[in-house]
Length: 305
Ligand SMILES: Nc1ncnc2c1ncn2[C@@H]1O[C@H](COP(=O)(O)OP(=O)(O)OP(=O)(O)O)[C@@H](O)[C@H]1O
Ligand SMILES: [Mg+2]
Image 1: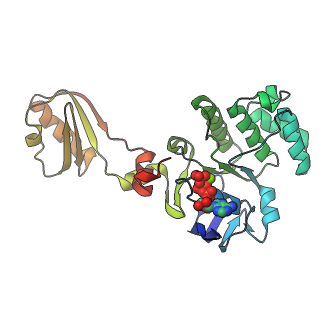
Image 2: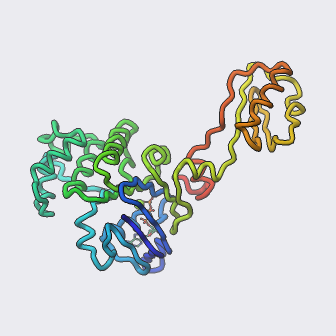
C-alpha cells in the first residue's frame, strides 16, 4: 500500500528525511514515532503527494509519488497538525464546504456516514466553535474521510487534547481501523497510544531506525525478567540464587528482580528454594517493558518531548 525506496527530502541545508525505506501493507495501522524534527510530517506530506521528494522513490496505492500526485491525493486523506475549521459554521456545513470543494460524490450520504461513525451526527447542526477540542478533531478526521480514502494519514491526532478528549479520538481511530480495512498511518508522540492502536511501529529520526510489531520490539531489545515480591524475604537471598542459570539479579527492600536463561523452565526452581528457606512470597510476575523503554533505548533519553 505504501512503499518507499531511499526517500529523501531536504529543505535548503536541512535534510529532513534521509534514505527512508518503508513497507506498509493494506489494512495496517502503522505508528510513526520519533522526536520533534525527526521528519514525520515531511514524510506524510511527501506520501500524500503534497510536496515532492528531493530524491528516492515512493509508491502509494500503486501510484508513484511525484508523477501521480493528483491520483494519490484522490486515494488518501490527511489530518494535518493544525486542521483549520470554520468556527461559525456547523459541523455539517464545514464538511459540506469541503465536499463541494473536492467534488465528493454522494455528498450527503458521505457526510452522514462519517459524522455517524465518529459519533457526531446528533451535533451536526451546532457551530464547530462550540465544540470541545476532541469533537473538533473528530470533525477534522471526518473531513479527511469524506472521499473514502484507502489511506488515512493522521499527524498527531491527539496532541494538545486532555485525556478524555484524547481517548474519544483514540477510540474513533480504533473503530476506523477495525472496519473497512483502511490503512492508517499515525504519527504520534504518545507511546501508549501507539502501543494500543498500531500493528506495526516505525521509529524515525531522519531515517527509519527500527520497525516492528510492538511486542517483538520489546522482546528483541530487552531480556525477560522475573520479579518476586516478598511479604518476608529470607536472609542472604543472594546466596540462594547460586544457580548456574541465574544471569543477573537485583535485590530491593521487598523484591527481587532476576534474569534467568529460560524463565519458563527455571522460575519454579528458584521459587522453591526461596520458599524452602522461609520466603513468604506475595507475587511473582514478569517485568513488563513498555514501548517507551524501547523508544528511549533507540532514540535516546534526550528525545522525549
Ligand atoms: N517547509 C520547511 N522549510 C524548511 N525546513 C523545514 C520545512 N518543513 C520541515 N522542515 C525541517 O525539516 C525537519 C523535519 O521537520 P518535520 O516537521 O518533518 O518533523 P516532525 O518529525 O514532524 O516533528 P514534530 O514532532 O515536531 O512535528 C526539521 O528540521 C524542520 O525544521
Ligand atoms: Mg510533525
